[in-house]
Image 1: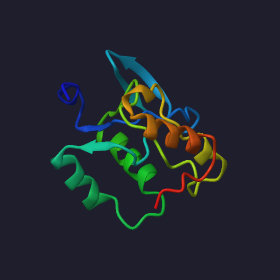
Image 2: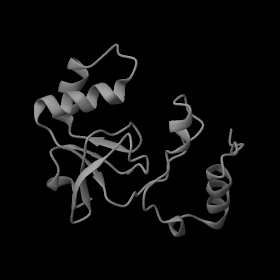
Image 3: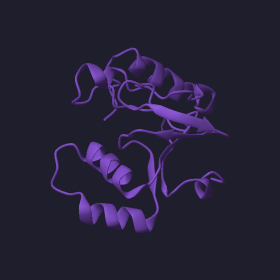
Length: 131
């Protein structure tokens, strides 16, 4: 977690391959500045999360609202250049965009063989069957 001090206190461990929605503007030494991020894998500093939650509430599209709030506050929104986590939101509420939510640069080798098989099954757009 040595990357956290190089952020402004908002960083996601998940880098979305959905670059149409979540575009990286610049990547340096493993960290990318993003125009927006979703909710998967986000790490917030205590100060920023407290302030954001006081300012952004009762909205339908919470992640878009907090991304806009960060931009207005001058807080860079960061993502790891290569995802440290996989994403399992492909069957979400965003229709065709949900299918684009795959982790950019995530190494499947980090998972057990059973986990790799489940993720591969899921990324093939099938319900993973996990309860």
